[in-house]
Image (cartoon, rainbow over all chains, first blue to last red; front, side, top):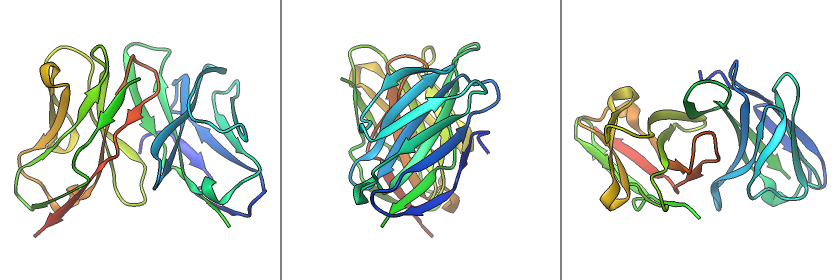
Length: 115
Length: 113
């Protein structure tokens, strides 16, 4: 158990809909990262938040957005869903605020299926 | 931009045999290097990491990796594999600590009795 939690575990929705994925980082970790894993694109970085502020953006579509709340949990919002958005979405956290803890710990992921 | 190459898509080894999974990276300086393992339907588990210092690093589950600057490589090794090691293995790099990871395409490991 990495200490990173993600909900829900599975999500099935229709095209055009909007969903919200939730992530709680390890206790004390300030950085949260979102990644997408799909068969054709592999594991791709989407976005990073550090202590509530957006820190880095990757290949994140404009239809996707994220935020990190004061209690450090994060949400990834996916809207106007398309079939191609079906993927496994991972959240990871790292101890950006303490010591030299640079490694990222991953949650179990949310499997999104768009029909 | 940094990139990671895992040249072997699929490797099959016999239980008890040794294992080496290859990873090459492209980056101007020495990045932070990681190996993760993903079992079917599971998340990514960190096996080991290299930031600096001793180029041979030990990880969990009996894995080790060696950083070779001259070859831009960070290969993962295990002297004797177990059936439970069957999984997908990902090499990843980050330019600095607490920054995004760039992953390789992964190597799927199959263990035969």
